[in-house]
Image (cartoon, rainbow, N blue to C red):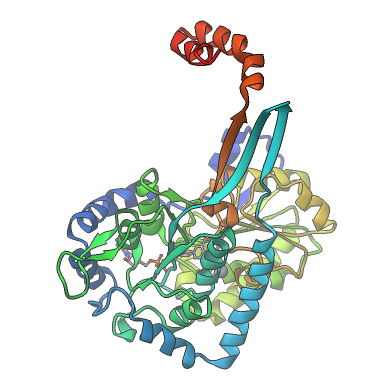
Length: 440
Ligand SMILES: NC(=O)c1ccc[n+]([C@@H]2O[C@H](COP(=O)([O-])OP(=O)(O)OC[C@H]3O[C@@H](n4cnc5c(N)ncnc54)[C@H](O)[C@@H]3O)[C@@H](O)[C@H]2O)c1
Ligand SMILES: N[C@H](CO)Cc1c[nH]c[nH+]1
Ligand SMILES: [Zn+2]
């Protein structure tokens, strides 16, 4: 069912360790070769191409690429009250956490009349991707939208794949969630083509050729499959992106005190996202490893997305990694840099303090990843594929830029003028020094 990798008694360099660790054959570069021509076609053919690609990849030709306002409003009217209450609770909690994320502006006085200020400025317009292929993700609407709203972004557009069983509209709960968050610009566009539409804009309204369907955005965020991740990589530079948030990963660092039933349930919970999802258990306990393997057999057998989960768990991206002790376990999870890392050990909080690479850390027996997916208040759009080594999850910072404001008066400039000239001359750029001298 799931491979074992035995690292016990082995001393490995970081490079050797990385080669031993399980990693999905999520070949973003290969996917990029597939989606590059799609992006180019969206850029030149706009709405017509978006309809053709929807037919090809989503199996439906949407009547409306931009979802009409009355359809969004109707979706919230028919929303199941229990689901509405859960969405509202998620919105409340995610707003609370993201409201606390905004970094403070500051001013530094370097001397009398010499001031540098830093201001955090939101981007003007954002394109927020909400996946909708193998599953639908109203929760991802909240994660994207609340973070952008908390940053103060003025113009927000959401895209999610057209659903065959919804006459080419996005999932109705996705639409209702947009309504709950006051979002009225929603597109029935999925995959790489949605990322292209956001990056380049798209011409051609629903019935009038030459009109604009979608204006280009400054930043594109959101999770998605390997094609979405590849498209984001390709448009980076034309627009800003958040981290690549591709097929889901869960790593669990657990010792003999962990409950094997909980560990197995958590591995299956994330494996159900995608056949390319990764589920990794790192443990020094051979007993726990055996018990988890046994529980996995029962759980996989009983779960709804059995075939998808089986492929994910059998894939080379998933494994049980046996280590000598929790110290080696920590080294392994830090080298892996999982999207989600659960710590189910004695003293889990102390170990969590020593984690240096993970998209998000879930501490102790009662903080499963599923809690973070929906209700913790944290953001579930997190870096995958090792991007946690250099990137953060989605948050208010994803939509902000730091702008420095420099203000010196005449005396303050005079004070450093000779030093500016000395450095300008040392760089062989004397006109820089002359620009300062010219003022005195
Ligand atoms: N890392 C995170 O933060 C995070 C959060 C939520 C979900 N996820 C991941 O998001 C993904 C969602 O994937 P999904 O497939 O359900 O929805 P999706 O919306 O990401 O992808 C569906 C789209 O993929 C495109 N597509 C499908 N086959 C294609 C092909 N052969 N060539 C080009 N394009 C193709 C289609 O355009 C379709 O609209 C999962 O991998 C899940 O694990 C990640
Ligand atoms: N686990 C996903 C992030 O990889 C987020 C999610 C949304 N819905 C369910 N799960
Ligand atoms: Zn999940």
